[in-house]
Length: 396
Ligand code: BGC
Image 1 (spheres, rainbow, N blue to C red):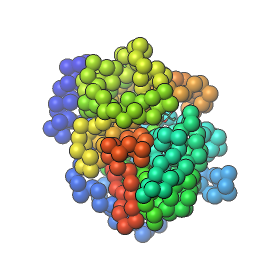
Image 2 (cartoon, rainbow, N blue to C red):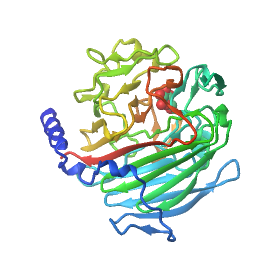
Image 3 (cartoon, helix red, strand yellow):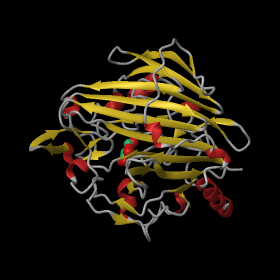
Image 4 (cartoon, rainbow, N blue to C red):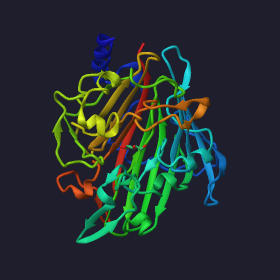
């Protein structure tokens, strides 16, 4: 397996391996495609991607919720306006059998009741943790309601994952928009956020942008849990992961970064060579114990601001592969440690610990309190832009 993997990595480096076909990583992709003005379904002239829109119930706040079905060649993605969430991603295995490679629920109500899994959601305004929910900008201190061990996680208890976004079909995908009012969850400034999901070949591309009316902090990511075996069956411990990161950000007992950029060398966090997720997860390591498995931010070796590799995953059982590219400086690798059998997911599957993994491309946790970390500050007149691409494939 190792030789084939290594060979495939080499070939992928040349950009021509079959499963990577369709990926375009030119900087021009950071310019959003022109919006569609036609009625649904929108079918792109450039490629055979169709976008359909359906009603998906009514949220607790009385807002109607929609679901969009984006169908490309051997890649079908469903996205709901509740939390701008990816609900399903269907891809073929090495025999061509389609299955869903993300965890999630059957219906809106289950998503609304599940407050701490963030399945498929866009998390914000601040993805991951802010220590004690407190930070200062220009000498003024702000407080976010706490929802995780004395800290604010994923934007606080009513973060972006709990909001009904506005969705509209665009060529090859959907654009989700959220206007977060000044003071929402304690964050300053009215923040206008657009998240564009689009299908291109074997890729699902996510383009984020945000503007503010007052200085604020922003860290947006997608919180999909992947299980490449399909339909959430089994666990992800045999899936083989590679993360091109020489360093990671160790955390304290409440999962707040200590500020150190520690080397991965000689630790279970060294994924520079492809390694099974389960190979070292049980090691006697203080960092692994804090989160009950992997739950760390990796400092990506690539150049922030331009698309670079964040991770590659290979599932030996199904042959499915996932490659993650991003413009972000970090990726949170989370191995689904807090799934505990109380989540009754799609296809009648109950999610146990390690049923799925997240690769949340992001700025580092608690950056507003760590001046040495890349800044998450956004000022009026500026535009936050970032991009992440999930490339799905198979290795035969
Ligand atoms: C965090 C975990 C948290 C999970 C929530 C991840 O982004 O790093 O600590 O438990 O989200 O499901």
